[in-house]
Image (cartoon, rainbow, N blue to C red):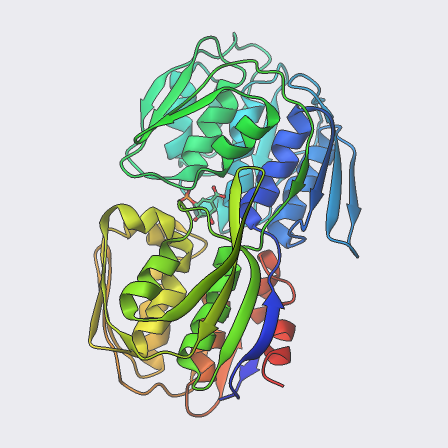
Amino acid sequence: MIIKKRNPLKGYITVPGDKSISHRGVMIGALANGKTEVNHFLLGEDCLATISCFRRLGINIDIDFQNEKVVIEGKGLDGLKAQNDILNVGNSGTTIRLMSGILCGQNFSSLITGDSSIQSRPMKRILTPLKQMGADIESLNHNGCAPLSINSSKCPSLKGIHYNSPVASAQVKSCLLLAGLYAEGDTLVTEPAISRNHTELMLTNFGAEVKSIDNTVSVKPRPSLTGRKIDIPGDISSAAYFIAAALIVPNSELLIKNVGINPTRAGILKVCQMMGADIKLENIKENGNELSADLLVRHSNLKGVNIGGSIIPTLIDEIPIIAVLSCFAKGRTVIRDAQELKVKESNRIDVIVDNLSRMGADIEATDDGMIINGGKPLHGATIDSKMDHRIAMAFAIAGLMADGDTNILDSECVAISYPGFFKDLINLQN
Ligand code: S3P
């Protein structure tokens, strides 16, 4: 995909539904009794992989592609069926980590894996606590990565534990909470900083007993979950590209409708505010315990910021686009405490720094983040996305303000989380 310097962004847009909430809608819907109807479901590759895995486990799921609506016929906590094939999650870390928790609670065995990126991402972070709960789960190649084999048939039921997670990760926390639905006794997870809480909010909405006090979440086992109707807000991680585009392209004024602003996800808005961005929140609503708002974004003169500590988990997926924004901000931006970026769909510290350097930015990698001296004009370059959807989209936005052509390699990877991204981007500038 070639990106050229473009016109201001004008008008309005609705971005696709939140990826994290869409995954959880299928998973929790499958474990609930009765129908769950999910509106504004994200029909990207990751969430379709979750649907495909649950269909293999005997759950009927109807997809209405036209209306972005998914209906799940939940069969209760013990309604999943054994299947012989290996479950394939594609590129989706959320699917493999959350599903592993659920599979450890079944009375049948499973094998689960994904693409080459998934097979190199760390799974020890879930294997260690799941084993502490009594699960028989192994990395098949003994390298701490997928494929994972779960031998639940000979395993006694799980027991609840209090796990002190060394990483702030919603995937680890959610994996354990979902396994905790099948455990004897309560399951508690304490994290070093609070990660996204969609699992807690949705489990509560479906009837589970979940408590959150400071950095600790607990769940009571064997709740009776009841199917629900869910309206998913737009994904703030997808909205972030258009927020950034409107902020950096002069004369832009853009309304992004119905964006999820759950405080455990909205760190990007705080950072934009610290940078001096003109963003107004309108029409704030709540649905299924999740907050959303319309965001009115106007071109702004930005300044560099320091980002680190407990805000990091609330904007972890937005760091590629924050790095791009920082190139257009006056002064220095320092991002620290973000070493988790190294184990995302690509090593995002290296990939951001390499590609922005190629475009002429003044940027250097650190052990746990990066330092960017803003204000140097960017020029077009060939961008290796490493098949990482968030890298492809962040650099498409950088290309809007670069002199010359920006060529994004493997740009089709945007289909992981935002299949219509390039179409939407072009439409806003005509
Ligand atoms: C996600 C959690 C985050 C995030 C990922 C989606 C989720 O990962 O990066 O894109 O849906 O729970 P970690 O929990 O590993 O930080």
